[in-house]
Amino acid sequence: MFKPSTEKIKLLSKVYQKSVKQLESVFNNTTSVYIDFANVIHWSEKLKWHIDLKRLKQLLNSFDTIKYVHFYNGLLENNKNSENIINEAGKLGYLVTTKAVKKMKLSIDVSGIQKNSPSLLQKFIKKSLLNKFSIETIEYLNNKLKELNNRGIRFIEHWKCNFDVELGRDLLIDLEHNKINNYILWSGDSDFADPVYQLIQNKKSVTIFSTARRITPELEATDVLIFEIWKIKDFICWNKEISKEVKKNLTYKCKKDSARSP
Image (cartoon, rainbow, N blue to C red; front, side, top):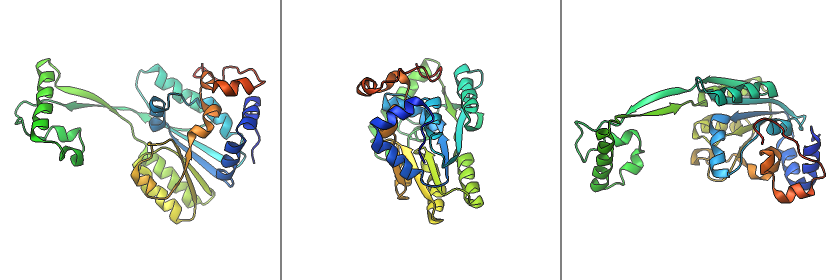
């Protein structure tokens, strides 16, 4: 049942009645939400708007069938913004799972490698794509790496923090306990295809909240339901990013929902 947790959500629900009805249909039974924020946070680059953690939680709090909201994100050492995200999520009532972001040094040293050899490039380019390259293209790319080497650059720093194990584990634990009927996954990562398929095989409802082109073919192949988050953009974006047309229809004067929502 939908019961707006804030006055703003109540007013927005009158503008977006169809979207609210769709959410009620998705959350029509006991529900658990799993947000792969390490993946989701990068969506803003394509969306051109940002997901506000407080406004998102307020929207989810408006549905009494939602029992748990899991939140997964890496912690970057000595990074204040990273720490703030984790702390804010905890204070807002998300069930936070975090771990340190791994900083990996990847060699780009081409010394001793033949000009036409793909041995170093295959560390960065998928084999299926690399096989399409001509010898000339491989030589060109190796020469570009050599130029970096000549400038003293022989490695690059890569940050990695995946939560496929932790999130997949929580999905299957909840399946084993058999107290959740609707599983809501905020991610488009192919690593979750297997647990999603297992949930579907066990007659559970699974919905992916994502946006166009962020769903991998592996997830699409499971025939999982997909909810386009553009439908709820004005419920969960930063206040200044709410559609101008909608703001005109709101009689409620918007206030800042959080420090992350200018």
